[in-house]
Length: 264
Image 1 (tube, rainbow, N blue to C red):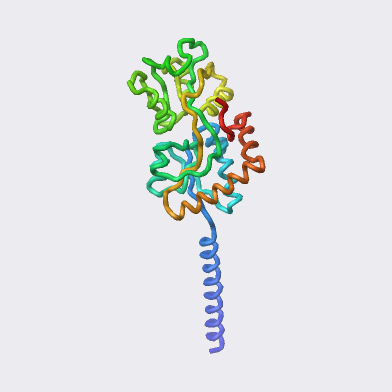
Image 2: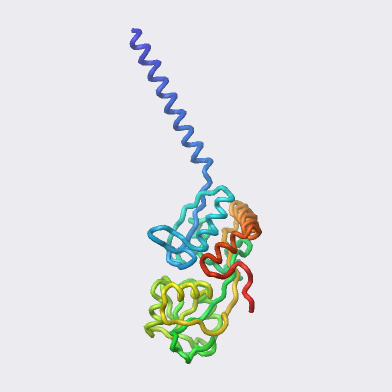
């Protein structure tokens, strides 16, 4: 009988320990602050894979913000057009991939304060002397990433549809398309093109001034939860600008400060 009582007491103690452990795990899960953030993982030097690790300017800025705010990041990788669709459907909290702040996007999302500045730039083969700017693109085939704002910027400058715009799912390999003469030109952000030319060593050059100047921010859904998140991001962005972190990260990837307005 004594043995039976002892076994009952032991069993009850074990249940109490297991319950306590389960309670602690549940509490930790509730306390953990997680943000689902989208990126392409193919946008050098903003969000790309290096030896299997996601790195880049936008990635490091987001990590710095998350660290300040006490969030853990859950990165979700997809093509850019897919990312914006996931953000619209509520599968992501935000996108960290050089998202330009436009009037069209502001109809769907609320944006944070600007953390970087960009310009839609034209790039051509180095020995191409026919294309010197936007006006020379008429009758030419110009590459752009599907769903990117740079593609839309080019379309907005071509109301008569005289430019043949060829879209690609990602920017991977598009520089080779230009270098090999399969397309006449390519439009993307000025900073990314400068970084890519230096990295690849391909015979390419930037021509003309940016056809559109843009501000870059984090898009959030228009609801109370994400309005609060956006305010937290704004506070962190301001602090990172003031303590020099934004400038430092920019110079690391671009050898220039893209966190201040472009000088026209």
